[in-house]
Image 1 (tube, one colour):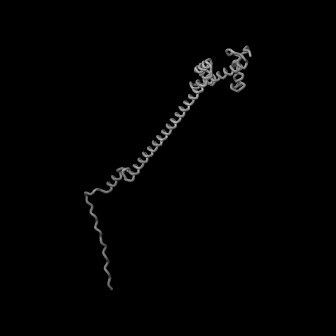
Image 2 (cartoon, rainbow, N blue to C red; image 1 turned 135 degrees about the horizontal axis):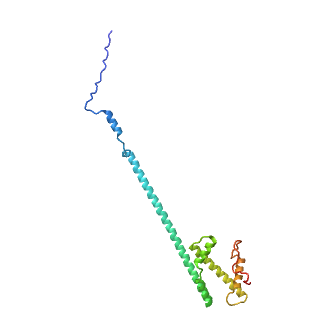
Image 3 (cartoon, rainbow, N blue to C red; image 1 turned 60 degrees about the vertical axis):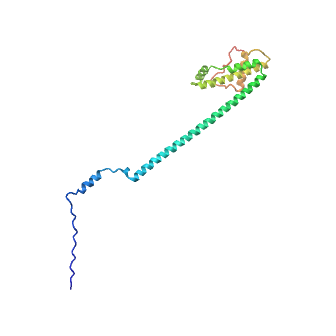
Length: 210
């Protein structure tokens, strides 16, 4: 009986380490201590550039939208201004036509009275003080509006008084009782508002007559 000889285990040669080679552990530690710039990686750089481009595109879009809105706003303002100018021109033309028609049929005295009425006005300082006393505050524009309303009111009272005097067959300048009658008629018509707080003392005294 033959016995096969045992195979010898082949011994691998041991690598020789040179004395001059560096120790791998310090190298690894030094490599781990150096910071890694993530931005230097290609993927991160692409993301940063894409984000910057996106922000720039968004800013450009917002600027374009703002410019478009500003342009539309300016166009609307221009259209409104043109409309106001056209309405003012039409009103001036209509008033000129009415004045021309009035001048054809009116007497010289009536034309003179009308011109005087156009030039007459209430002082703005007095109107501003009156509004401040009533409501507690006032502005220059409010004083202008109040002066215009007061002028219209006085004109209506005088016109009503003249009509009442003509119906009564009287002539000459207006008298106080004509103005009081016109004021009472305006109150009955609702032109003058009634208030429970303020007493209606306009054109009225105990010895004023009718």
